Length: 144
Image (tube, rainbow, N blue to C red):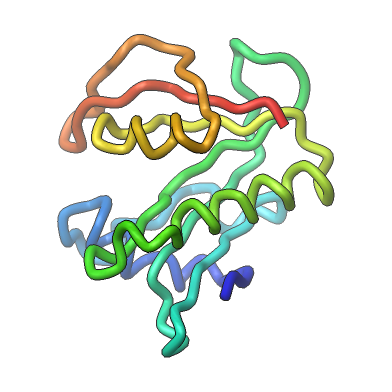
């Protein structure tokens, strides 16, 4: 089941998956509490939160019109390859397109996730670059 969640509910998975076990208070994004930011989660059959994402209003300089940026997408390692992340991302896209009338969705993708995002129709818009302490990334986007 997919639901909107509170920012603090994203922190355990951000810490575990994206920040190598950093304390949760160091996994908070500046935009988490902005009124234009939303957080979504995928809950398994036992009502455990197993996948999260955050979407923040942020235009990209290479793209026209109104955009949102994906941040902090993480799936618990025990729940990979079960289609949870894809379903969650599609739900966020639908919300952005139908409820917020957003023109595009963009983010910095980790190299390991390139095939996942490409399967969902996202395209590259940058060369690979390194985010210190996190690793190689490319900017990706999708017109909605």
